[in-house]
Length: 403
Image 1: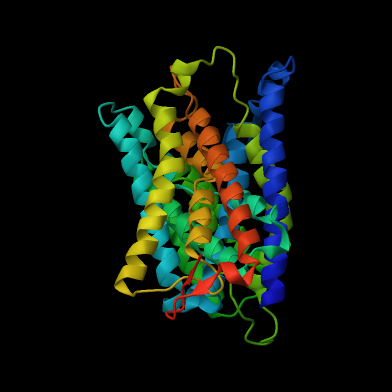
Image 2 (image 1 turned 135 degrees about the vertical axis):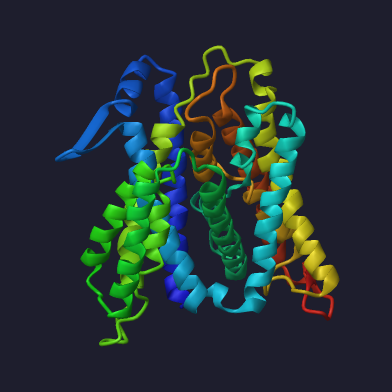
């Protein structure tokens, strides 16, 4: 179990660093003489046609609607594994991170709404600051080395998992438009087939993938965002092989996909979506209510929401802090939760369908994420270094550590 977690953290942390480098490269290229080449790449037309069935999108849409479905597929696999045999299988372990995730989604949405409630167009972006980027956050945490308590990493991952689940629900409920009932019916018909494959103990992943591709294409045409096909498909991948109990098709697939997603899909997504042109950027641009609301939601709203949930749980005795951690370290994690990058960019694309005239929501995403990451790192660096000295951490007799 711990060896598996260690590999997961190492992979996610390295992926977060690669993700950051891809975003920085995109901004450099978008503000260099190569900016025309950059835009030609992300808007290059790509057409897939089988008979009369055709999907014609540019490269940007294929990355966001196609490759990101694989990312959501991996998220779904992680959710299923954690719910059945992992950190989320015990109600006592999931209550605190679950409530933190809920608080960390509600508070940023309220901060954004407070600044944009008078503008109907701007209000489409209310969900942008509700997301947490687990790869990026773990990448920052990894910079602190092996002094970080494993329980603190698990706490951050657990919050992010619930956060991802919340994002999936938000996308399904609020970013679905112009439904095609025929396409939706085709997608729905795939679910009982997947269920039957699972019940018959079919462990060949190819069978699930073929049905999943049909479901993805149908959802793409239905008006429901196609990436949800990845999550739905993941829930039917068998955790155990009844003929060989030592073999887990789900865990094997999860292991195989982690490298591709962490070092391929997510950096490519970052490169295709973070290319912000800074030409003409001014203080007024940054203070536009949309990027300001996003940045404030990520930096201010996230930490308020997460810490309010923590303090409420401690006050009511519903949960206690993760073993070996203290309240300042938890506050540092609440700051890291303000790194919204990948999911925030994704939801921004759904909310505004591109870059609206007059403001760029990506500015708020990047600024809010960068400030949250830097301050979270600096605080945790102090807390974790101090926690290495036993005299600085005092047990209050109730299982909580205080400095």
